[in-house]
Length: 606
Image 1 (tube, rainbow, N blue to C red):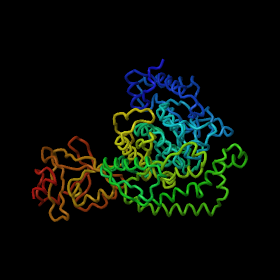
Image 2 (image 1 turned 45 degrees about the horizontal axis):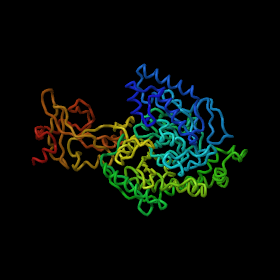
Image 3 (image 1 turned 90 degrees about the vertical axis):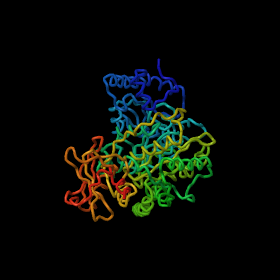
Image 4 (image 1 turned 30 degrees about the vertical axis):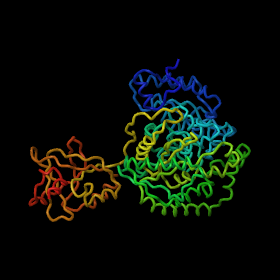
């Protein structure tokens, strides 16, 4: 009999704690999941479940790994996958029963998860052929919104989001072309990560728009999403759109402590009369300010126009490519609304496709002006929500409304994470999305975690508070730590050379006690020179340690005038970082100011 209670959380931190203490086993978790699924009845979440014997075998294998000392982040962690992602030996339906085919091998992302010891529970319901943001376009029924079944669960990754929110799995995979990994997150009070395009392989994923598709991750918090991304990310030669690490722009692991976040101009915000969403977005802006952000009003029009291209421009033709054979040979197996959407592609010719590409490029160039003002963009994840009856009455227009804040992201090669933002007076959840240029996945998850905690929301529909904060476990990108000692310190004349390169202040500390500091004569602005001393000489000198990308570091170093240069400094705790050093000839007639302990103290003494 399971030792888990129906109210126990399946977040990774809680699972690991109970596995390590011996209170739970993976078999206990699997048994409790089966009980929860049975208790929910016909909830529309699943298209297929793995046979119970297979589930328990996977759990037993995970238990053996734990007993052998394997402490991998995902060992014994249950998950689900959207049913357009292949799992060996299982049908892939894309929510179209007559299209179903048996997968001979698993997708790359599923293979990585299984190798990491995660336990696959089943395949989840979705909007047919991943076309929709509503979650109601499936012959397998509509996944039941865990907060109010009258309302849509969000799509197209509807079943995956509900499975996480309802506590049926710890995390789930979806896909995201137009927002399918984000809108369902908002409607289910969970985190939805749409990582940089090409960071997660789409090999073994049935395409919607092949050049834009991303595998998305649903989780109860940002730390869990990060752990999953760490396992499944990586270059895959079998996926022609997969990106090698050097092909993804290198970013910092966190945004600066004082960062700028863009918000659409008030005239460009849309809520379709939903005052709850409007109030909760305003609260999210205030919460982001409270953790160090400066709001910057931006022109949202370039982003909105790009979003309109996805369904009202030539990219509909790419959706047509994905289902062309079905549409031309067996159109009757498609839902009427899917046929209607795909039919628009037959009117698009080559000239229209190139025209759309040119328009996209023009709009991306316009958006550069807005990105120059901000480090990250904050938008509502969706402008409103709808009842299932409202969607049934007007399925296409209302679906388009839901993509106003999501459709542009993949077209513009941006990364995004959807974060819970609280509950309205109607007791329905909403969410906001943090968006940044490609490569910012780690920084977005770190900032998203802080925003999630600031909002004070619970995890999914469980009613359970977030676990204790932990460092977001995303491997840092290609970055360099640099110690500055003089005119580049915060508040000093050359500090802008760091901030202009988006460097981030990590800490203020001192060097090891074997450095000499001199006031170099005749420099403008005044600068000190740091020299490494012989053993037993010198003292500890105050420094600031900044982090920047290796590309920014190269630009910074190239602009350093003599007699200064960059070498390796040893800090008081023994850590070695890059830092300013001075050529010895420049300090022959300079005043030794080491006894002041730092440049700021010297300036103050004057």
